[in-house]
Length: 287
Image (cartoon, rainbow, N blue to C red; front, side, top):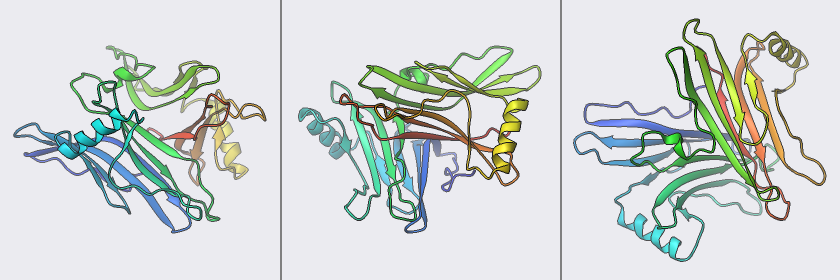
C-alpha cells in the first residue's frame, strides 16, 4: 500500500525527513483523508520546521521559532490545559462526525513535548469509523526517537538487525496500566530471513512469520471464506462490563497474499468507559 502523499525529495539545500503518516477513507464524500508529517531542514543553517500536509485539506506548519505558536503554548500551559490545538481542524457536528485535529502537548515547563493527529471519517451511512491517531515526539537533541517509548527497540548486533515498524499505546485507568505495543522486524543476517514481532508491555507478544505454515493456511482459509481480515496472536475482546480491546488484524490482497496488518486498541477511563479506539496500520514488509 503506497502513501497517498509522497515525501518531497531532498536537495543540496533542503532535506526532508518523514515523521509519520495517517489516512482514513470517508465514504460519504468519497475521499481519502491522508496526512503526511515531515521535517524540513535548511542545510545552510540547520533550521527546521514540521509540515502536516493533507491530501484534501489545508496543511499546517509547526515552526519552533514561531512566536505566536510559543505564546499559544505558554497560554495553554498557564491555564492547565492538556494540549493546544493548532492549524487546520475539522470538528464533529451533529450531522457530520468527521474529526481532523492537530494537538500539541507540552511538558511541565510549557515546552514542546509531542504532537498528535486525530482523524475520524465516516462509512457510507454517515456513522463514525474508529478514530485513528498518530503520536510523534517533538524533534529534539536525542539520539533515538524511541527513548520515550515504554518498550525500547532491541539493539542490533553483527548477526541480527532490528527495525521498528510502529508503536501504539493507551493508558487504562481502571487497572492503572499503560498498554503499549512495539512492532519491529527481526532479520537474521546470515540467511536474510525475517519475522515481525509485536511486543506488549503488559500482555503476551505475537510473532508474524511469513514462512509459518499455520499462519499461511489460516490466511488462505480466511481468504477463501471472503473474510475481511484474519485475527492472529494475542487478543482481548470486549465484554459487557469491560470494553477493552486488543486485536491484531492481518489483511490480504485478492490473491490471498499478505498486504498489511493493524493493531486495534481500546482502554478505559477511570469510570470504566471506553476511550477512543487507537489503530496503527503497517504495510507488510516486502524484503
